[in-house]
Length: 359
Image (cartoon, rainbow, N blue to C red; front, side):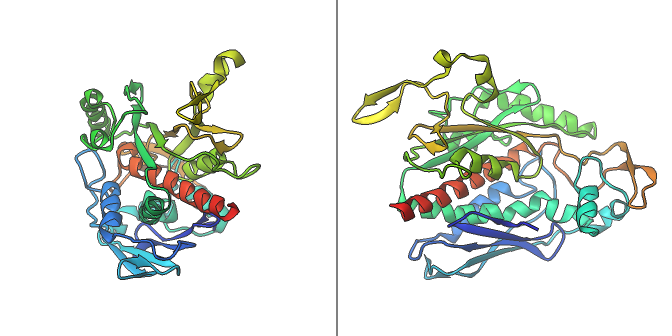
């Protein structure tokens, strides 16, 4: 099973949803970087369940334990291991799912590949696996702060179903995004989105949407053509997240409706720097950052587990029906915002360290 991500700043996540715990081992982190455990915990708190009325009610403190790699608040250059203990497991809610495949979940495909699976909570396919990514990214964020201060990574809920937020990627702030429980950058749309999620949940159903992300103050030159282009690694990072179904950067699919004259980003010298007067490239050209804001979007499907009867089959290949049990998000997007930020931060940190190795 491929549980490792990154080339220089490498992470390896471990653990199952209802096992003893989940976590991460970070390798390749530079030595003598100040790391705040409080900052790691802050990011885990943004991701944890039970934080608001529109997310899963599973109660987990998600308290981070640092087992290695730090001394007196500084990185040692050795592997950093972080674990979060699971304390609110309810495997009894998954007894029926041990023999019945949940539609659009990973149950059948894990069985087809490995011949065995952790049925309780989805095992490695659960979004709980992302705790290790968020913890690692909190360390990576502090590496960025030391090596290249000023880089910002902000994500927000752009849409839920047809409800679209109006957000300016150039000016949106983290305070605005965190001011509402749905984590949209458009406070005027927040209550409408919240009510949609509540209505869908009350119907035993689920919804999806789009998260948009901006990376500001990224230096030009990051990205490794041909196969490790910056946008290619961002796409891989985002599509490795549970429930993702699409990725686009810059103009994305809408750019196909334009001509080359309309789509090209003209270059000009501005304040002594090479700049573009538009940004339909989304901050990346030829797989390398050009210094403009990197803007991308990630599509998330409706949560697979719903509380109504659905057709399925058993592990013995017999037709049957299954109704969802347990505690689940009716919409994953509010909790996915910090996870999208985390994966973007991991990609940036890895590529910045790769570029420093070249230099």
